[in-house]
Image (cartoon, rainbow over all chains, first blue to last red; front, side, top):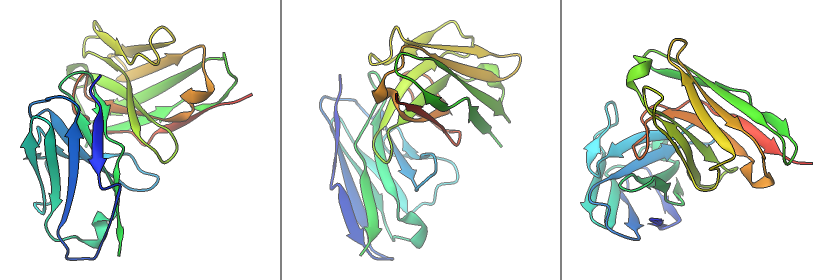
Length: 106
Length: 118
């Protein structure tokens, strides 16, 4: 099974900051990676698919990059609505999620 | 607008059964593979099961294989998850989502809570 790890587990940031979250796969997954945002009591929301493709309606301050085993989600100018937990998910072989990264207020 | 709504969650005893339902609207349902994804309280996400648009292909995570059965009714835009031999560690919020196996999950329901306890 492919294992997914994320770092950091928590990032404290301020509105306007640039935030970067890393995701690593235990083996190569090409670019079959998605990123989700989840707020308390809500379902996850798809942000990025195929590592770098922005889902319809997602603000352009979100971007994704990477291939193989190393991936990054960046938020260019953090907005109040962006404080949430972010998950990566590989869908190359089976489907597994990372443990999540919480973005909270500094 | 695509909407998914789960129902059927609740309290079950270990070894018991529950059937979850998911009603879909706003999409050409039979064209979409569907999945169930669960989340233990405040923690990580786990894909549980998926079904092809026709219903001819079904897929399960190892943790539920042989205990859970996914099915769909395309005439009524519904997908089901029959859960049997429930264990305490099946306790989670269960979401239905558009997307198969393996796949990204674009649309999600609001989730239904399943609690397994004696």
